[in-house]
Length: 95
Image (cartoon, rainbow, N blue to C red; front, side):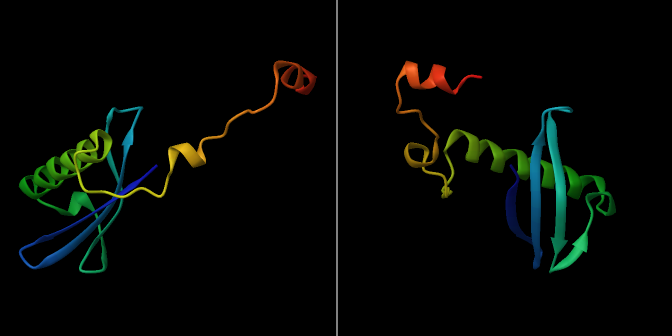
């Protein structure tokens, strides 16, 4: 699952799609745009890159812990698959 983070720095609109990598245990930037134009984190200076990564870390923490004001299209009561049959029905499905 990826997340989208939007911010404004010095009049520049920054849009970042990012995710958390379980391999490196770090945030990975998937895609980035500044004022609607393609951009990369390696084009940024170290201070700007560090600031962005700190903001992405805080954004992900807010989303994961539910402390931010984010909406989700997932309704866990509605969207989680369930099994309403009996054990006999389940055993009948096993080949």
